[in-house]
Amino acid sequence: MRITGALLLVLLSEIVYAQGAGTAKRDCADCPEMVVIPAGRFLMGVAPGEEDREQLADAFRGRSEPQRAVSVRRFALSKFEVTRGEYRVFAEATKRAGDGCFAWNGADFEKDPNKDWRNTGYAQDDTHPVVCVSWDDANAYAAWLAARTGKKYRLPSEAEWEYAARAGSNTSRFWGDDERRACEFANGADASARARTPHGASWGGVACDDGHAFTAPVGRFRANAFGLNDMLGNAGEWTQDCWNANYQGAPADGAAWLAGECHMRAVRGGAWDDGPAGVRAAYRVGSPTVIRLYSRGFRVARDE
Image (cartoon, rainbow, N blue to C red; front, top):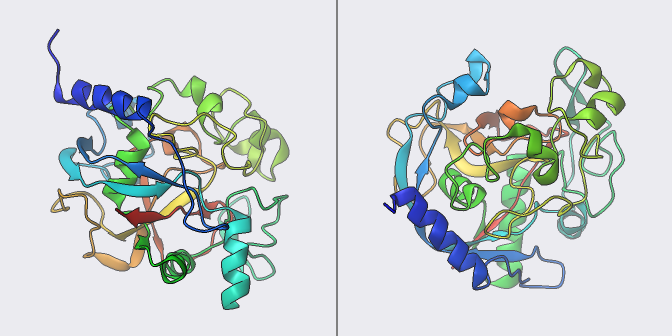
């Protein structure tokens, strides 16, 4: 059998997983659980034909091109999206205030000044991912963790995020290309969202029911081969990288791309209100750093 580079990465990922990848440890009692991600090389970006197959809207096409090989150093990533309970410790310790949160009103996203991470407009508890947080909030949380622990916490680069999300796979999602299996692995727009959310009846979405109309408690869905949960769906995730419309000139060493439209940052993974085309490893959007959105959160990385 001929072993391609992609197959070799899958095999190596399976070996690493069998030897304990996915084992999560905390640096303090209320710090996020962190998983060490092995160094490796992968194809970053969208595969030829994927955007056509997924019927991606024209406005979102070409953002994940050109597909290219990227090397990533060993690092750690939080097993789950940062939870509301973990964020609460930070917000209360630092007196971090909110300033409203954007939600979909049926025609556009509109800011509600009465909403924040404590009151998103839908039911959450402290086991859910924190949302209604800006890039500035997420970056401040990572800096606070670093100061508390003496470890080098930060937001992941886009390359690190995608490498971790793919976990050795080269398909559109870490479980394969079949969107119908999404409800086993990811919380996206589904039957529950269509039936129970305002304006959800007009959404597309996957033809299954994951049981959660909005966010789900972290870890409810199956992990990928690196032992990471909710890399796709649940909450969109801020990354370090400045926004660039495509990958022309992007770093190939796994580092964050800190040139471009730096008042905006890249968001990855899709969320509970995204249909299948948005719940893919290659999917990416850009957002102003100050925006707080009712379906957007983050996870943290740590240098190893």
